[in-house]
Image 1 (cartoon, helix red, strand yellow):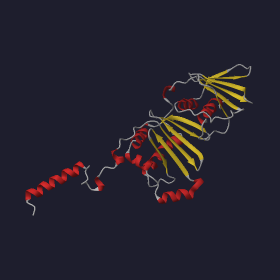
Image 2: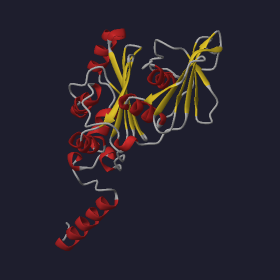
Image 3: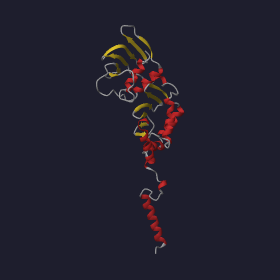
Length: 277
């Protein structure tokens, strides 16, 4: 039979062992999950890309300073996110709830619905620093993902607080030439660091005028991203040749955008510079 002193000694020993084993005595509901204990990813540049089946739908690129860029098959728009929206975005994207909603695996019902939707189903990818994930085709039970899409509607539908401040960042010199059969033909465009666009058409007198602010902001933000040159292969015999600063010139088709593919950024820069003329 245990004495009172022996029982007390056993109780203290058991508590100490439980604490040493990582709070094993706590009920499961009160234990901190690995996701909750992990440090939050700090808010910074992020990219959200949406597809309909395998087709590019749109892309939103946000920057830590509050600038944002929206790209789709028709072109691009840029501006500054409203202060209230930016504050909520920062809180949401750093939250444990968002990380858990983004990285949670599909359950059986979600998998079946997405398989049934197939090529018409929507797929969205997200990246911010080390945090990456794919939205399921339905997000009705993932409130953090739903809120993100709601906040980003301001960017999708061009409801910006205004243009980039003071035309920042500065531009390198950008030269765009029209090509025919692989040779310069037609107009030559030079965008200077101060935003002045110089257009030379053959032997005619060059025209100079400032590039529109909305187009200039798109170019500035595209230059802040990773510019992906077109996939190596036969260069376009017709289209545009683009040289940014001292980089090697890049040739891209002109017209229908490389939606979501390598070379899209160069093609958009060319479109922004040449479309006014």
